[in-house]
Image (cartoon, rainbow, N blue to C red):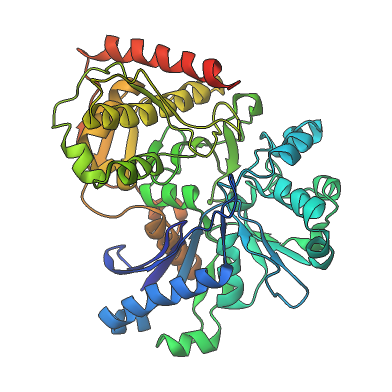
Length: 482
């Protein structure tokens, strides 16, 4: 048996698979996000451990024998989080999360240094880890003075699981400290933020052995000795391993809390001016590009709270047939935006509201706004030299057929729906655990699921969608200065 642990923003998912990659069972532990100030987003690392224990306890209750047979564990996690430890591995402050934008000034200052784009192949976004450390240095100097180790969220789980300070390439590529082409820490960039390699974990590939489960935890969960922990992956690369998006030409769209358009690459293809991320993949000698929007299902869930109806009920009101975009538009920039704007200060907006604007009209506008934001990502990837002919949809938002029809029509490409099953980050992490424990060929293991259905663009509505997208594109520069 093999266990995948995915540390997300809203919870930890634990998934068991067998040697034939059949899903045996899953458990979940919930997490909350603290937002003490506008633009801030934090979590206590102790809550990650509690949620992980909750998820594994659920698995132990339902599948004790299978859990006892685990031989490999893979880790996936939300990226970019700044987990700061002292010399005794004590957490110094709450982790500053991926969608925290407080360090936008520090990010701009680092990005103005041409070495950062040149070495990392990426813009220094406010959500990345390096500018957060500069913010801590500038605003919490007493904490910065005590800092001895910086870990990403999933790697803090590894420290608890195995007692090791280890990270891997895909997650570390989102820190603004990794030489993404050479797949190693850049001492030059670390020095630019008054850090050095001693502050960093050691690096492995995502498929490598990266520690052994501590005996205390193995005994607690009923496992035997020698359980291998894989290097793992950042959540998007882990999802790509779960979806089999590991070879050039394959792509997926993820509708989770954030939205991601992800394309695998056989070589390193940086183009930072496009605001596309060029990161290492979890598999050795592979890379990927992705465009990221900060609010996908987060936007619908926000509106759901305002409307007082569940997201599923809101989308059900739209019916099954795709409608032409109406006069109401929506920019889903509730916590700023990454691709293509790199704008931490912009916020969401409805346009075209009138007395006749119904709840359904606003729901439709939210779905279309996210679809058009993903279209922005498609255009950015194209400008970065990556052609995408079709995508596979994953994430909670992909359960809405209406939303997928809207996305297919906005993008102008087919959207494949995989056969029923969970092929996301936890599954990808379990696959990495299998590879690390058995030495299996990663490409043989990380195959794509069969396609259940394909959603094609609605050619009748394509002109209306193109017109609405052009209006969407004009909205951002119109409101940017407000």
